[in-house]
Amino acid sequence: MKKKFLMINLVIVFFCCLLTFGQNTRTENTLVINADSGKNIISRHIYGQFSEHLGHCIYGGFWVGENSPIPNVRGIRKDVVEALKHIQIPNLRWPGGCFADEYHWKDGIGPRDKRPTMVNTNWGGVTEDNSFGTHEFLDLCQQLGTEPYITGNVGSGTVQEMAEWVEYLNSDGQNPMSDLRKANGREQPWNVKFWGVGNESWGCGGNMRPEFYADQFRRYATYCRNYNGNSLFKIASGPSSDDYNWTEVMMKNVGTRMNGLSLHYYTVKGWSGSKGSATKFNEDEYFDIIKRCLVIDELITKHSAIMDKYDPAKRVGLIVDEWGTWFDVEPGTNPGFLFQQNTLRDALVAGITLNILNSHCDRVKMANIAQVINVLQSMILTDGPKMCLTPTYHVFDLYKVHQDATLLPLTLQTENYELNGQKIPAITASASKDKEGVIHISLTNADPHRDLTVNCKINGTDFSEISGRILTAQELNAHNTFDKPQTIQPADFKGAKIAHHQVVVKLPAKSIVVLTLK
Image (cartoon, rainbow, N blue to C red; front, side):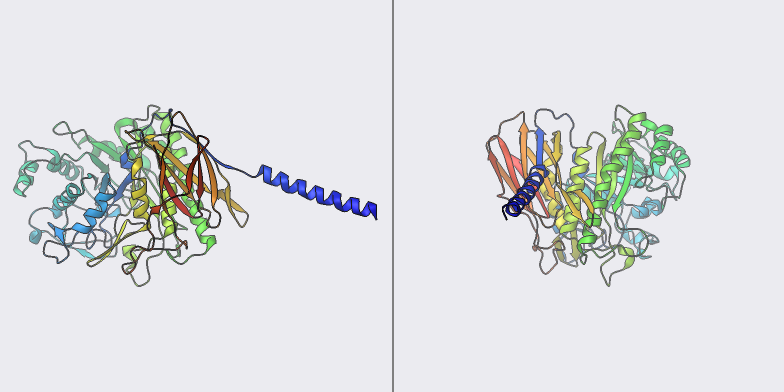
């Protein structure tokens, strides 16, 4: 009996030791930030937006016309402009996208009643009246206080056409394009800096090989002149996702003749068949999207390594000018209009992606989420006079504190979010210090079930105040509608405290948090 009792005790002790060992070896969530070691600036242009002639992004989104009962300034919606000014969008890309390589800019200038119509063969086959063109777009940018980023037509256009567009916008000399601009009501040039030389030239922009496009870029870029001391920032059509050969060929054959090389990556289940619903999904589908979102870190790292080989001084920026989620369109809408709802899942994708883009700011100089209104992962949805802000909009609002701030190096050790034998990091983070010396830390917790405690040590600075904002919801598919526009929105965050010269953060499940330290 005593032997049996002793054996039971030994078994109990053995299992207690196993339990203790498991607890002691469990990964702790630790974040170490070196506040005195930052050297790279997070360009505000990483927080750029993308507007294409697609669905109701332009028409019904930005543009309602001067005679619309919807409040507008020269045909541009006032509510949309006010909302986007609030999140301080730094640049706006236009007119596409695939649309750019079928767009002939002279069709969109002059009296609107005399502009020719065109069929948008890429997106829905609809007829456009060209009432929103160059002057309207640049008026929009001025109302927004943002920099225009114009994509020129290389696919179906000519060198002369693009060269004249640059001259029309930027020259104040005595020449036919300046005279034409003045005849259309604009005396002074706009001095547009950012120019895309084609779009997706490997696909809808011409189905070109990288060797052929490299020569085309050199040719087109030669005739995109600098006027009035305005040095153009010329962005080449870059790779899709993991096409590393495209980057290799462009860096070898073009190199620093370009100022930027674009990269497009969408968080999408697949390009054939159903892409899944934006609002009706299970945890398996949620996990898959977050896992695919994280791939952008690997892509940027590998493309940057190729660029470093030819451009160690990092003179050529990596321009991630199309990114975001892509799901099936909402039931009952035009399949060519790419209208999708926007949930907490999208907000987490945005927060994670922006943390990754921030971390690569030594090479990534601009990014543009697709797209700003009514298309894919948008900031804003409109329906006639109605407007609502999406969860993704609120992420950009929270993260705007990083714009033009100094990236602070950090080391993150995180638990994993595990599902069906797969695992991904549960937490992502980025940190910056602004010009006033205020530190901001953005954190995401992708685990939909577990609140996680993060112990944050900040070296090289003192602080005594901490505050925060959080975006989360009860359900992963929570979203705003025109009838319920405030279902998901930021709130004050009280889950961070200063303890023993560190910050302890209780990070709720499925949340995005931005902390401010002073």
